[in-house]
Image 1 (cartoon, rainbow, N blue to C red):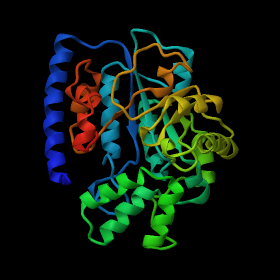
Image 2: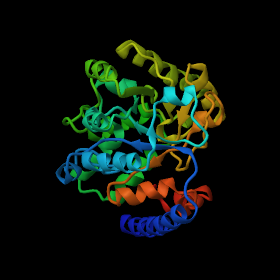
Image 3: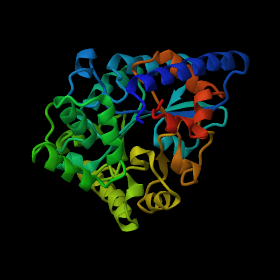
Length: 337
């Protein structure tokens, strides 16, 4: 039997609330050790109107204002915001660091620039290059939009998206075209579209922007053969180099799925660092090309919960949520934090 969205929300709220109480106590009694905290974002929204427009999956539901509050929290706690180059040059063992990352290559990521400039901090933007080259929408947004138009429930949307995560991108896109029409992968506006090639080239030249590899097709690599994995990673490296003149040092494995072989193929393509979608603090220093450097943990910030509370929870060395994640309770419960 499917758990309802409402049940998920209540369970998530209860765990997060308790986790934040534990975090506050831990920070007061124990303090915090030096570490690298990495954070994952996708799109940025201007307001609630955009969040509820129905043209794009809101995912985390983070607004530009929330993004600024997130950076402000860590600035006030004397964290240093870094780039992949800083990691490779070496981080101090007692230092407190933040790495900001955005996945996929949404054009709306340009909204991050004024905030990054205000605080003078860098961010990594992981690009799925065939979306840029072909101007195609992201398949999870198409499911969200087209199911919504047909009155399907949020549960049905998530079930369909989760089924698609077990397939190759080409198979998912073929199904969407058969189900919703040949033009279903055409973006409907500025909110759901990827960068164009020229826009990405200009974006890449910003002093606070670092580009990362997110495969050619947002390929969930564990669904692919060895040869296909290599093509997805190397193809993205080559495409980013062609479009921007820059070659990434870091990869974000789509959907956080990776293996020892995938990490080795990423290294063979010239990548020295990698990030996953597992919450946790990364011990410093981090040695480039080391196993832990190729699977650095990332937290996710959610717009429907207090930003400061989430930031404090990430800084704590003690976390109920992360403990439950390690024993796979969170995965079985059906939500991410």
